[in-house]
Length: 441
Image (cartoon, rainbow, N blue to C red):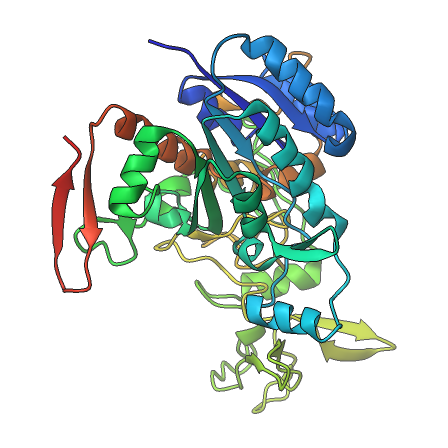
């Protein structure tokens, strides 16, 4: 079997690289800005040359080191996951019209990190590049010589010998127990992949799961993955004695009151009266304002309209005045056993986060549960070194929130392998209401 070689840019702690390792890629070089993330990466992938620091400054070192290590072999893959915090949530049309009117918004410097990444790729010429980022990447502009370009158009312009396939993907459709939508951009000069793309119009594998499960497997639910784990409680039991990652954040009395009265698949903002048991108090709502921005209701009641008791809804107290806390209906929301988790973000340990209250217990997700829902198996990644020093909690949650679930990437790489070996059957959706199957053989 021929060896496959890869590099990993913006690698963070290396969660995505779990899939590269499982798919038999030798990751020669990785680059990460932050020291704590690169140390965690090295703990898990000691055979990879980790170059820590700003990619602008380390660009030439990355190129030189990769060329030295790859020798006369081809570089098969580059995994590139630039920071997403600066990506635009506005539509492309609005952005371009703002620029034409001379009102271009201030550019986030993190968006320009794609430039040194593409310069590295142009020099190393890997066969295939996989970009993973938030959906908003497709609407994000960068400045190139006083010209504004969409990031995806910049990639096409700078890599003319490659085809560029941009796809919106929900990882739940591929057996990840998490509703996580991302932009997967596949850039390749591999002839077999190009032939496949020209024939079928995509380099993304067919979905294997769906919400209803019709003609496919049903989405993997939270219950499928974390039911039966040791019980924890936001006041009474914060950690497991058997698993150092199965631990949670302590809740104060007020938050525990809100959470303990929140039904399954409901937000604490909709909790009803526990004094008189009246169930018709107005629910919390949100709607778009005149500018198109989604805003939550400020008139949601916090006192029971029947008995006037304080409702167990999220509130703040200032100068002895109780007011409704700011938040959407997805905040302080209890998960459903029967559905995938919502996106695992860096705030997953907190009950105020988006839909992260345990389906049954009075707490947010534990760190172990977040790993499981992110498809990280215990044996695949270490958060504790050989001296029994555990990674700090902030780094763990940042590592998970910033990364691609390994299961999807492994599925994608397996798909590429099948295309190369012509061992694949692919269904083409037609405008008519039927599917037919073509084979590459």
